[in-house]
Length: 377
Image (tube, rainbow, N blue to C red; front, top):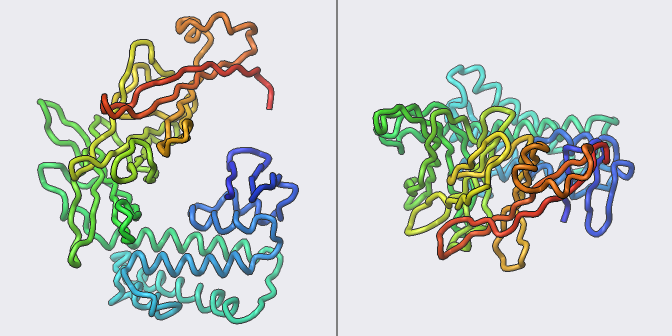
């Protein structure tokens, strides 16, 4: 297993059973780890962490790009290389076109991908190639860009609006994700859609709606999923599958934000042939910094709050650990004055939430203060 933090000035990575620092990593590889945007590509670069050559990275990156094009277009393994790109991105007949209303831009995307395969993928697939010092970094970043463009094209190719009723609102913005939500080997589409306000209870209310589509008999069908309502909701930043509530399927974890400063996380649970929000129980005294009284629908994650998912008790279901950094005055109000022995101390309250099947809620099962001092690294 390989894991890393991309937020620290010094990179510490667990590679197999070895702790590797940035001193052990080729400088170009360290740069790539910091700036690659595609998670699948990042895993490839991390897998070859202590290698100084990049041939394997580039080969595997092109395999990933081909697989991404196939998954997005529905093409089979008999299409590859230029033939695959032509079938998916031909400016006039490509399955994933029109990427743009401008013919020249459609042609440019097609030629970019063809050039990438013919100039870089073909040579390295058939012989050893000697690259100039920084060329491997540039090639991998080009593939990173290509992966993003393919995903964007797949999102545009599907008219999600045709699966949304007029009473739900109009699509303001969307972001699509593809994952196997039911473990049948096929990728479903989870389109996180911000909908225009609709009138509810005399008020205009916006919704962030997960539009989940599964292909059956050659056609997409919508799976019901509960939407998240609010006066101001922005686009989703991520979707992942996690075993949290012990349902028949993995839970869908939705991440979205109000810009750079704050992210909210909502968990959808498979129940009665639809996805519903797994709510949380909020006991008295569970205020959170910035957000005050927490919502029963979501967990917040921003500068003074951090979330992680960990199977603490080894039962196969992950608990939610919620770290909250309170001001000194807030901590005194919460009854932690006795642990504040210095004005330079920082106290983080770690709250652990576990799904309770009987209550059908997340309940807080532990709260523990973690003390550290300012200035320590």
